[in-house]
Length: 158
Image 1 (cartoon, rainbow, N blue to C red):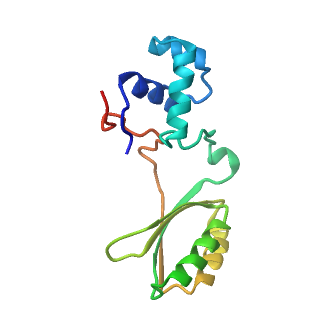
Image 2 (cartoon, rainbow, N blue to C red):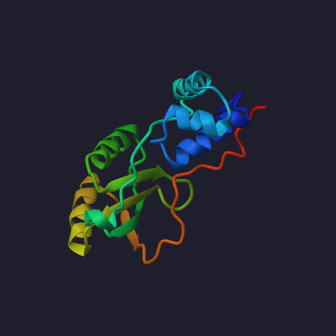
């Protein structure tokens, strides 16, 4: 949990979430603090893990990956060895963007992007190497909201 984040820290984070290419000088000016103070705050938030990484977001459609699929997985294997092997398998599949271990009726939920149905079939054939009990997929027809920006109103501090 982020502790000690004040209003200026939240402003810095909001700016960085919108555009990580902003210079420290630009951020400092918009927040109303000196460049050195701004740099120190950013560096501290990086060291504390509040800022996990800075990335460039790409357009999946322009990279010929127009199809997003959510894959629900159930397994009969509930042991550390299987989980470790499954983790290695999914790490090695570039089309897989997210893997979540879930509570409830399904064990894992995967988000992936593929070129088309044959691309999904190739992904499916890689996944079933993990000795799965049930695989069910749903394909995105329309994306109504997609963001990487986290709400900052819950960050604790001054």
